[in-house]
Every structure is written in C-alpha cells, then in structure tokens.
Amino acid sequence: MSVPRCVAEVLREHSTLELECIDRMYLNLYVPILQREPGVAYFWRKHRGYSFASSALMAPMSRAFVGSIHAFAENQGIPLITFKKGQRKDEIARKHFACFSGDEGVVFIGKAQEKAAVIRTVRRRNLDTGQTYPWLLHSTAMVNQYYFYCMDYDFGPFFLKLCSYFPYNGKLCINGHEYLKRQLEQRGIAYEALDNGVLSCEEPRHMQRLADGLSAEKIQRLARKWLRTLPHPFPAKDLRAGYRHHVSILQAEFSLTQVLDRPRTGRVFFEQVIRDNVDLGRPDQVQLIFDRRVTRRTPGRFRTRVLTDGVIPSLHFD
Image (cartoon, rainbow, N blue to C red):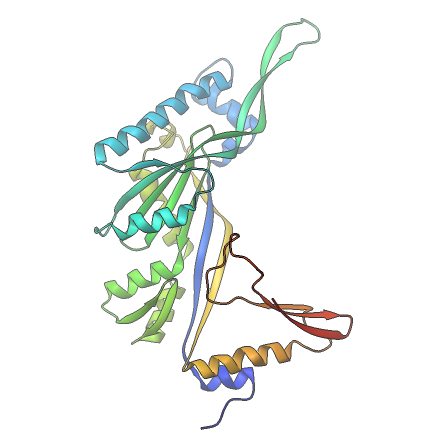
C-alpha cells in the first residue's frame, strides 16, 4: 500500500465523498419603506391617517404585538423562556429540539434583551414660534427580541427572530445541511449524518443536486410561510397595503465536505498542507482546529500555527 505524497493526490484518490453545500445562512427581515424616516412618517400620516408621526403611536402597536406573542404561546402550549445573560442559545435550542417529535411546528420561544436599531421621536423647537414638535430619527435601544425556534417539514430546525419595537426588523437563520437531510429523508435516500453535515450517501450525485436546489425562492417561501404562521406586528390592513417583510442576506457560510477513506490519509493531508504553506509567497499564518471542546475556562492554549516573518517560516504548537 502506497502512502499519498501530496494534497492533490489525497483528494483525487482517497476521497469517499465530496459535497458542496450552503452551511448556515443568516438573513435580514425588514420592511423597506420603514427603514428611513420619511417612510415612517408616510406610514403614520398617510396610511394610518394620524396628523403626526410619533413614538407615542408606536408604543400601543408594540404592546399589542408582545401581547399576541404571549397569547400565542399560551394557547398553543409553547414554552416561552427568557434567555439569561451569557447563556448559549444554541445549547438550549438543541435540548428542546431533541424533545420535539413532530415533523413541523414551533418548538419554543425565547426572549432576550438586545440592542436594536429603532425609530424614535425627539422634541424639537420652532425657532420662529417657539413651539415644539416631534421629529423622527434613527436610534438604538435595548429592547426585547423574540426568538421563534421552529421545525419545518422541508428545512428542519431554524429560528426566526423579531424585534418587539418599531419598525420590527428581524432575522432568519437556516442551516443548509439540515435542509439537505430533510430532502434525503423525504426521498428515501439512505445517508449517514454528521452533527452538521453528511458522512456518506448511497446516491451522492443526487444529494449534490438537492443541495444545489436550495434557491432564493425556497428561502423566500420559508420566510413567508412562517411569518403568516407566527404572531405578526403588522395587522392585516397594513399587510394588504404592502407593509411586508423583505428578505436579504446578512451572512452566508458555504461548506465543502471532503470525506477521506481512513485516518492515516487525513494525517498525510494535514501534514502536507502545513508543508505547502511554509515557503515564500504563501499565507503568513495557518491554524489547525482540533476536535475537542476548549472554552475560556480551559487552562492553557490549544493551537498549531505556521507563521512567516518576512521569508523565515516557523511552526508553533501551543
């Protein structure tokens, strides 16, 4: 048995699976016209029919929205928990999803106080008359954010977050690997799952086509579907007038999974990656992340780095 001598040979001759897929995607949810002060003024004065635009009008709308969330949780028997400072939301979500047995539904709702962009009013004074008047401006505030952790038939676990204060911007977080697993299960294609990926599949080419099929239209439909299902800050009259959340990408992570045939091949791969980066013209830093949990409380330093100072490379193990 010959041992492969370079990275290209390892990937060419010793890969049992290769998959390109969207990993995590974090998306903005926002009503475009309400992101600027003139649009907010139009909403309250022209659409809602008030003589002025003020945060005094926003407060009852926010209270009604929060009330609808609590009523929704109580009527549906959905846990509503408050995230404590420093808690890892992913760990809490993992425990709740593990206990969820349905194909689809709201698993739990989390509440956290976070800084958010909001629209407020300040009092300004007319220099000619001396009278004060409200003036809209962008600001930030610590407000409650509501996290809806849900299970979708096509996308698997995800969360949708909505701010409890005007203009009620939100976030949608999906996982492309979870979407892919759901698609494989629906088609009866056998696969072996990783925690966040796929280790093997009986139809790898079909799996790649399914991964490529995760389109903007499907993500839009997911957002529309759950915004209709969950409590919404804008009543039906506003929605009919076009005050609906749009979707844009805030952050996207893409994954290339390459599964090697045996541990020895993986060791050769990583050692060769280090060698290939220790010469002139290569990146000045390479770091390997090992499969063990290291937290801030873990004593010591855990890393392997290749540093290049000018033309002199050095290998550091901590």
